[in-house]
Length: 195
Image (spheres, rainbow, N blue to C red):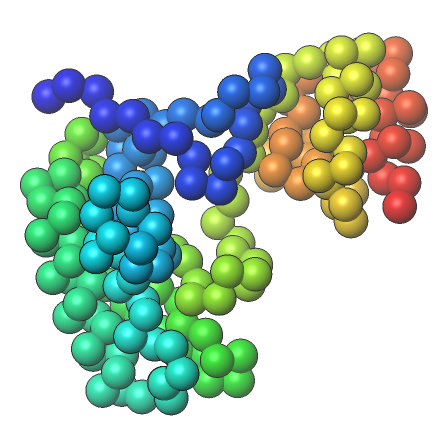
């Protein structure tokens, strides 16, 4: 099988300013998420594709609607993504108070033959706890300059040490080489954490 490649659906960039690329299982997961969260008309040469979640628009969340959505998702994945995706489990969990659904999909990927998991919410601005950090290898002045460039897109995000990741985290960025002995450590900390 040839390598699969996809570009990040959120428009995220790698450090040199080029679009972030995903390969193999990550490419499949990225394409699957795009298809699941797209709207009809968003695919250039196929305006009838996408919009699998549009059945939810202006509808009260009921068990019947959830079952209909589950069927549409399973059927669509079979048509669009087989044999690269083999669905193992699909859970759609309603949150009636926030009026959103959590979609939790487990599937076996064709590249690794391992179970992969994709979780998303039907409301785009709901915070998703599954996060992939972008490793930033810069140090000292280069890291400081990186922070200067990225500061406008990191509004409200603080640079904090995450003991689980064993790195300093700033939003989606993980500074894998930053330590308190870095010559620019204080300046980087002040810049990233100023309001």
